[in-house]
Amino acid sequence: MKRIAVAVLAIGALWAISCTSVKEATSRTSVKELNERSGRALVREAAAATYYPVSVSPIAPLMKRTLADYRQLVTTAKANHMHFDSDTVLMVIGRLLDQNLIVQHSDTVQFPRINGSYLCERTGMYSEYKLEMIPGTNNIKGVVYQQYPPAKSDVTGAVEADGSVTLGPPRGSGGKTFHYQYKEDGATALLINKGDMYGANFRGTVGPKVDTKWYTYSYSPEVQFPEPNNANGGSYEIGDLSGLQLVDDTHAIGSFAWTVSLNKFGQAVYPFQKPSGTGRVQFGKKPDGSWFVNNWCMTNCMF
Image 1 (cartoon, helix red, strand yellow):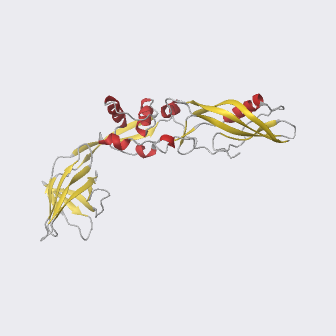
Image 2 (tube, helix red, strand yellow):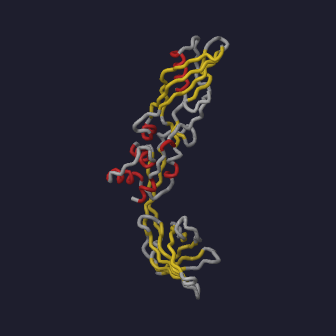
Image 3 (cartoon, helix red, strand yellow):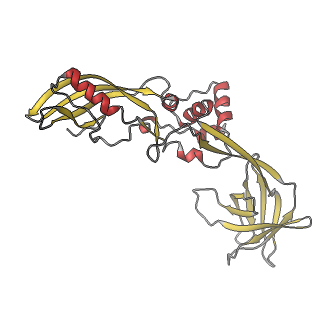
């Protein structure tokens, strides 16, 4: 269950509107008489030309190549009656996978098995790694023994498909990380020091290769990205216009209620409650006496 804990990142308010607060005028029509009804119609026309943005930044870190099968993680979490809020990244990705809005790809990569005892080859120097692979991953854990000064330390690391190996102290504990190249000479496994003047080569025993399944995730063509990092979550539904107030002979302001008509992507992010709020609108008057939408905003309005 450790992977589930890693994958579950509470995001809460990160699924917020990421559009700019003020919109340029988009209404193509104007009205001679401005009131709550005609003003609402103008705002509806302006809002019809835009979309409700959903930031995908919280998802981005989990879309990289990974050992995590998010579909299985969600299934396991539900089977074990583990409670996660609906807006955690893991649950959102699970719903997007169910809707085929995120596509899961997998491939199997073969890694050398770094396992057992590896003795230092340098004359007059005793140092030994005792290592094992963490099942289902390309990660390594173990201990290192040294003679001068006498010490025993935990080590962690990883091996890549090309045989590159890193070994060092557990993350966050400080200390030096060493880099090796894994090679085989018959039944002998070699960790060859990559140019570190304080490093050495180590000799162990060749073991069977490790097959590890990796996953990548991508958005389906159905998901629209009008702007980088913002997916189209649906369209705005404009409610009643209120507080209509004449500022001067050619300008008026008002407030309007709005909710979102969510598309499939928006429903996966907001499964239980539609986003809603109160926006602001500025109306302008043309020389011919007709009114039009000058500026409007959905949130964080500055007028």
